[in-house]
Length: 287
Image (cartoon, rainbow, N blue to C red; front, side):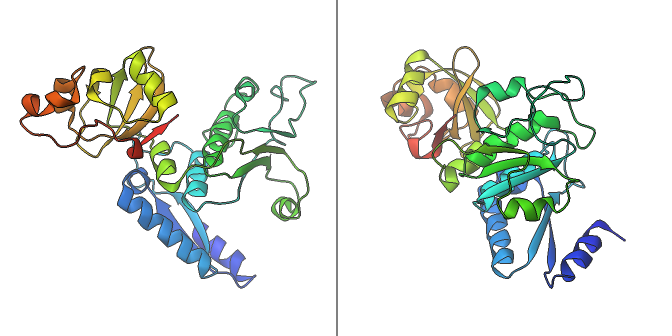
C-alpha cells in the first residue's frame, strides 16, 4: 500500500477524504503560484478534505528545496494562517540539553518562539528526519510570523494529537511572541532562495530600521548576484547581517550603476526613470 493510499484508507474510516498536495520551492517563491497554492489548500479545507502536504522531491534540487519537513510545515502554516503547528518527533520536546547525553537535562514546557537562548539547547540531528531540534526551532520562528504557536511533542505518545487538541500540556509549547505579519510580508520573509544582495551603508540601515522608509540608491554600497526587476533580494549591513529583504525595482546591472547616487541622477545614468526607490517600503520587510 502506498503512503497516500494509507492516508486515504485511515481518513475514510472517519468519513474524511484525503488530498495529496506536492509543493516545490517555486510554488512558494513565485507570488502567483503562492496565491494559487493558498487558494487550493483553503478550498480543500472548506470542502472538509484533509490535505496531506509533502515536498515534490521529483523536481526539487539541493539548491531549491525546503530542506526538511519542519520548514515545509511552518511555511504551510503561514500559507493558510493556521492557529497552531504541531511537530512530532522522537523526543518528548525541547530539553535544556540533549537528554541522551546529559542525565539531568530538563524538558522546556513553554517558551517564546523567538527566544535566542533556545538555540543553545538544541542538540544535533535526530534519528528521524534531516532537521533535528534546531530545524524545529527555526520552524517555530517561521510559524510565529503568522501568529501560530508551535508544539514539539513525541510522536509515539498514545493519541498525542487528540490530547493536544483537548488542551493537554504535552511536549514543548513555543508561543508566537510578535505581531503577525501580513500575507505579503510572510511571503517575502519565507523566501528560501534570494536572487541577490544589496550591502547598505549605516545611514540606510538606520533609515530602514527606524523610519519605515523606502530604500534609495544613495544608501547602497555594493551589489552581488544576478537579479532582475521584481526579484526578491536581501539587504545586508556592512557586517553581512541580513536586516531586510524586498522586491527590487531595477536589474542588478542597473543597481550597480546607481550605487551611492541620488534619485535625481537615475535618468542621466540609465536613460530612463522607473521608480525613485530601489525597493519601495510596501515591498520591503525588516528581519
